[in-house]
Image 1 (cartoon, rainbow, N blue to C red):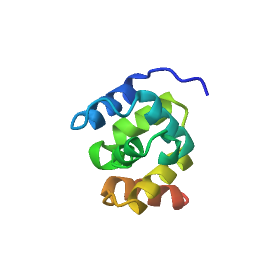
Image 2 (image 1 turned 90 degrees about the vertical axis):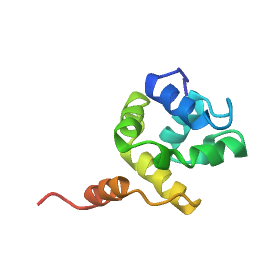
Image 3 (image 1 turned 120 degrees about the horizontal axis):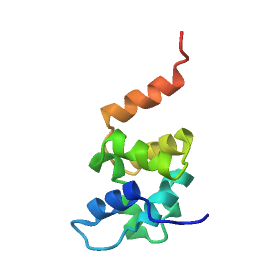
Image 4 (image 1 turned 30 degrees about the vertical axis):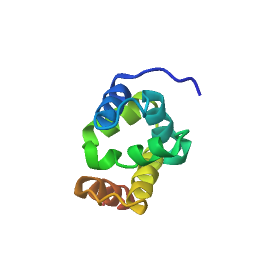
Length: 106
């Protein structure tokens, strides 16, 4: 995977790092979005920080970052569900997006 600093991934990483210092990189955000798992982040501290992504950022920014790195919706939903399983709160906007994706248009 060719890593490049993309605006939304850089913004997300900067914000997530604010309380801790430079732990998470834009490339870490890219890897997590594309793979759908925090396990793609190379250190456990970074994994824990990235697992809070959905609590810290709204869907618009995360979806924009996903588009910039060509992450599919299944990967984003997987990352969201993993974050919840790791202890993050459920986020109403993401719950709605996941439900809409499962419900065929009538």
